[in-house]
Image (cartoon, rainbow, N blue to C red; front, side):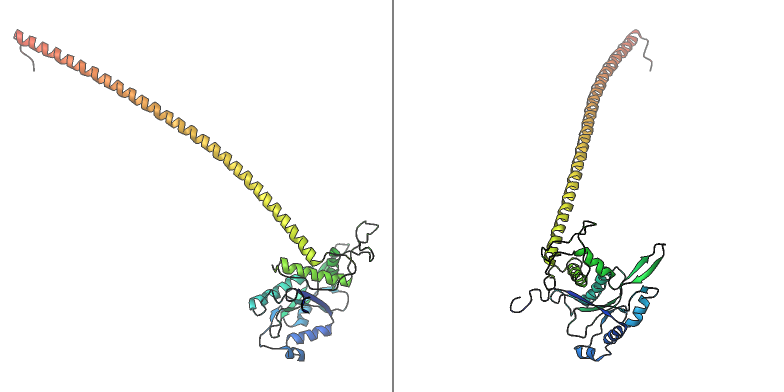
Length: 334
């Protein structure tokens, strides 16, 4: 911290979840409808909330759970999703709707895809970067005989997320504890691991899905055992993986382009050779035609000269005959 201010102040998001009993859900509904004292005290402006689903939480929860089996008495999970105040304009209605939509999407994805039944972003309070989300994760449970029933679980997906990210470690060495049977590290799914998985997943969502590149992870107490990468290290690892993936894509695209250009060059060269042959053939044909024309003209001139000579010879012969007839007194027949 500098001058008492956190380094990630205004640039980090956070998610807090708590289980609600039916009575808690009723109070939450009254608060959302501004029917309780605390909600009236918080009002600083007259703006209606943005709502996903409905403000009638009890009824929405009832519809959400129709035909669903549940073990336990938890009514639902109430999640408070806090978005980075410095990276999103909370006064802009489009950005407010964006936060509401992303909060619902993120928690649905984190909890298996079918969890959220209502959500609300209050706009009459001082802060406008927090979304209240009400959910109860549902999933298909398949019996051995093939029957499938819909069930609800508060922690099923949270535990799965934690086990996918963290492993148990030895407190002294910090090394992962290996399962002797499987030879693999033993995963963690305790409450603290579930909370960490939720925070890390939201940090990744802010950066990757919402494209908030300046988003920072929320500060938290340090773990005594090294059982995971810190968000910064994890983000850097992801960035490097994306860079390597992009490099592979570019290299492949370059190879494809080179091969395409090579094929095109070969086709162009082949076409050029074909055009050259055709041009040569046309030139040879034109030359032959020109030579034939010249020979024909010479032959025609020669024949014309011969005919002229023959015609002159005939004229002279006819003239001689005429003179002879006149001289003999026979006259000339017309």
